[in-house]
Length: 437
Image 1: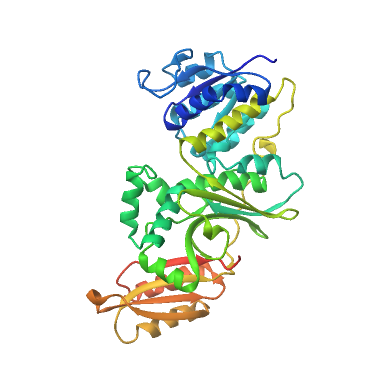
Image 2 (image 1 turned 180 degrees about the vertical axis):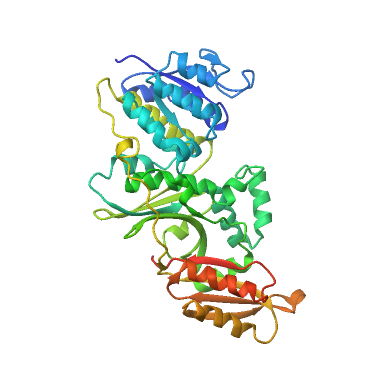
């Protein structure tokens, strides 16, 4: 049997402790699968006295993760610290430069510094594995990096944040407000005390930027993603979507166009009969469209200690199965130095149209003014419905518009015009509608 694979874990929070526990509890099974033992020989975290539910007494303790990366007697450095700078970046860089394999679940780090780190890994001939960084326990990275040779990806999209999907699912199922759902999500541990990173789309954007690089061979461009979160979604939107035959999901979408690559994160109305609409709760789903395979949908647990630990352990096991002299594939599917500069696509028509909700003063001329703003921007309307805003707001009306195919720019300009006209009493809502099943 080959020598044991020595693992050092930096970060012993929920995920790190789960990884250590799985490696301990599944040791015999992993040995059979990998042909060698996998042993945790070093750990680093803030509090050495905290009980993490696993015996780490045989592992050497390091207060400094960078020191562990540079000096510890390990073959694989597992970074579970989090953050795109500080000790996370410094320790991963140090481990790669020292010729050690790295496994990370850090999407923020990869979104900001992934290409630079990939160049170091490829130069040193070591692996940089990051399955847990996108969609938790779903093996989407391995699928795109290893199992789709010869396929040209045209679009990749999905539900990439469990917190947002949980909130939207409960809003629809129970008829409760966004704020109430968010408080419950925080109480249950699905949302952070400061949920901004999740609910405003940043987490989804980081994950999408990594998938974009894998799909299209471009350098990661997380800052070039159009991003909109779900904090503006109301029960009025949920009900209107249901009446129209749709369900609201926060999607991350990347697709190849004639003018470049389009990346966007925003709430989307998807047909209730579609597969993506059936993904509920904290579950994630990623759809990959290619020229040969067609559409592949991967769905499963997207977050949590066990789901993320499963992906991390899978990455460690892949390294354990490799042997000296084996030529590793590039980190992002293409050699890092050959990744093309990201070219942002030009704004184009959206075939599914848009849902627009406007809360307006109940007075003569408002309908006509809205219609004129739409016409001035060449927007054709499929339907326009007026509803009372409620008995307590008799001086207001809710106007719901559904457009035919048009551009984002045209819709935003028209809504901005209506706002300038002074007709709105509340923030307008604009949601893309996806027609495809």
